[in-house]
Amino acid sequence: MTRRRGLPRPGRALLSAVLATGLATGLAACGGWRDTSVSGTGVSGVGGNVIPVLTFPAEADNSVGGLANYNPLAAKPLVQTPFFYEPLIVRNNLSCTETPWLATKATWTGATTLTFDIRPGVRWSDGQPFTAQDVAFTFNLGKQYQAADKAGVWNDTFGAKASSVVAKGDQVVLTFSGPAVGKYEGIIKTPILPEHVYGKVGDPTKYIDKSPVGTGSFLVDSYNGRRLTLKRNPDYWQADKIKVAKIVLEGTYDAPSAALKLRAGQLDAYWGEIPNPQKTFVGADPRTNKFWYAPNGSTVLTTNTQKRPFSDERFREAISYAMDKDAMSLKATYGIMQPASQTGLKLPYQSSLLPSRDRAASAPLPYDVAKAGSLLDAAGYRKGSDGYRTEPDGSPLAVTFTVQAGFIDYQAMADVVAAGLNRIGVRTQVTATAPDSVDQAKKTGDFQMMFEFLYGGCDVARGLGAKLVSSQIPTKTDIFPNVQRWDDPATDAVVADLDKTAARSQQTTLAGRLVDTMLTQYPVTPLIYAPSRILYRTDKAQGWPSEQNPYANPSDDKLLILTHLTPAR
Image (cartoon, rainbow, N blue to C red; front, side, top):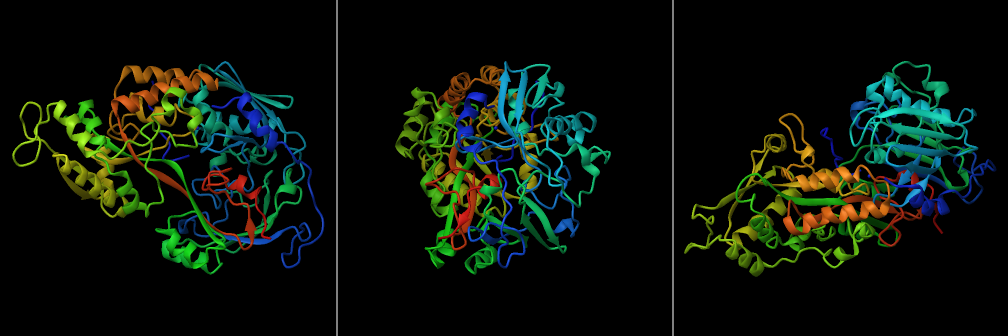
């Protein structure tokens, strides 16, 4: 099996049956609107039912140097949000709900053929019609130019490579040489490009796209090297859902400056980290200042399962009960991010992926020092007169926790880990070292304990599966998700089967087997959920995603968020 690169965090195969849910909401309202001018905005708008302008941070860092390049295939495009070049389907990776976008439907035939029904009536911003041929063109670019194949359609990453991508009327058919369900996530989020523009530029990854011709909700208004202003596209295919007349993207901010800008109303939303947002932002004006840190994955206790004592699953189980997750949440996140479930799934949002028999066991493991001690006693890790334990063969037992120096939240959590282990008699010390050194340790396996990230997305093979499959053990040159070096043929077989089925019921059954592994063999121990953040103001716009209305992943689904914003009342 080819080694796979996992997702860093985020950022996974649904079928037509699942799409039906999203269709009910996503297919509505395809009529455009171009009407009255909006006072003060200088653009066509919708009378009083409009948000004149919203200001967000820039989406490119300072290294871009003022170069206007909107090419989504570029290493550093000026925007990350698909304001211009849209995807086929938007999937909320919290609930796994899909919203049809440029495709109205996706259908797997077996696990080797994926067919998209392409939305009719859509036009590019220069007036030319958007067609299935544009979609086929976009994916076929990756066949000729490997660097353009961001979804891995033409290689064997996350499934077999494609044998053809063809347009047939209003459909596009992707045929693969073998099971390829694991490619779905990358395919549906691929930005679709206009053939009549990008077909003339040669290598598309080297093209400087200064005048984007997209199907998207916004057009470039102006750019002066630091301030990018976008204006609403009056001919957008779902223009009646876009109530924002202008968007200003300007500035890169650290946490203190972002908090100041938000409090002053100079930013309307921010997606970066601001410690203790309740105090630093919401407290300044609870009526308008809000935040939501949604679970985007989990921070997991990662032990080297190929070295003693961590090769002993009884030891891994015991120390999992010595993790004071509530203390970690408080020290690292001011209590915002909740203790994570041992299942490896983001609960309760992904509870539909749990077999019913596992729902009762979905709660986070309790902090239970007495149970941890009893499990170690039973496994032969005896406590000496000094209060510390030895290996079952009587040899000394001491472990080192390696943490990235300067990662304040990680260091705070590492101290809690060490305190819990020392309390149950496992002599533990924390060693803070340069982040590059930690990365090197992940490649070589020269470590005992550290923190890692578990994505846990909708595509179980690519999320939890990638964390556990042996093909994802890091190499001397690359870091892959299976840093703990879990090597189990039974797990590999489950992940391989996940790549072969697009049926949700079968996926859930297979996911349950991975969950069983998490609950009984402790390959990693989830500690607290890792955040997907949004901090926002409600004095200009309402309809932001929230814990009460989690229609979008707050940091990943900005395109979807823009269709939900309405003027503040």
